[in-house]
Image (cartoon, rainbow, N blue to C red):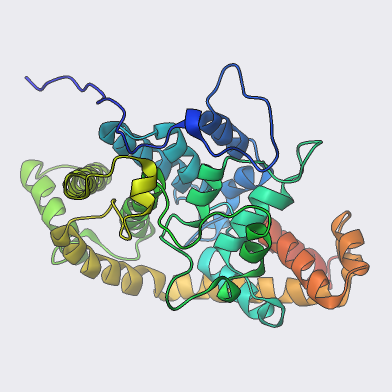
Length: 396
């Protein structure tokens, strides 16, 4: 009989909410929650988080209810990040907060929307979803009387923007970063040249685990490829063959669900084992030691990383480059480009308070107001807004 799970003690290098570096604007502590739990709750109640329910990465939101949205994806990432952090003795509340916030800066229509916004904003410092996340969390959310943004702890902000590693280094200075990073660094340094704490590193790889596996699930559900196409793909083919061997008569939906479940478990197990191996080798004694290592503590093993590469290549070619997806993304880019140019040329067509901010601003600031407005849209709202403004048979 398997031994019942028991959470290990807190690791000495885990982030500790009682020793947080605090918030930009001082606040009294909560009597019922740690600082990291409070951050998580603020993210969940943010308008930008709620809008993730109709923002997508691959499929446009109106395509159907079975595909992941940014919201359901973020919940899956949070579940994986909490599970791995719990086993490793890290702060699972911080890991959850970071997972929930990691996509909060994405515009509508996923990568297509980001590409279109970046191109439109090229003369005005461009668009970067990570920089936009910082703007959302520190400026664009307006819920509190004493400050703009959510006033999150230093650790949560650091983890959101550095979850994929340092932002500056030998070949990149702060002057090369988007303006949002430069502006915030003048208020509070997030130590952009170091790795983030261990919880942020775990959340970043939880993101990889979630989207690799939900892309398999969504791609099969959408009919972009078939189970047979995965048979020669490392990891995925091995697990699907294993399930088919154990359950030769299993219906297709259950087969996919069981294979994806096992794949997620395989990746999580590898992440935990590799994290422990690296921690035993590096022997960090504090979260600051983790930041100062100069290399990530969280990673997949060399074997899994090698097998993951052809799976990502398969998904890129058979899913992201599928003609059906390309057509959706082409439409999405045109919608974003059209809306941006119209609002930039005619700021009076923006709703208040965006209109008031845009029409009195110089061109670079007006462009950023327009960019913020469009980046906050859901897929469905952007489609409807485009229809209202560009369908000449439809009067507003």
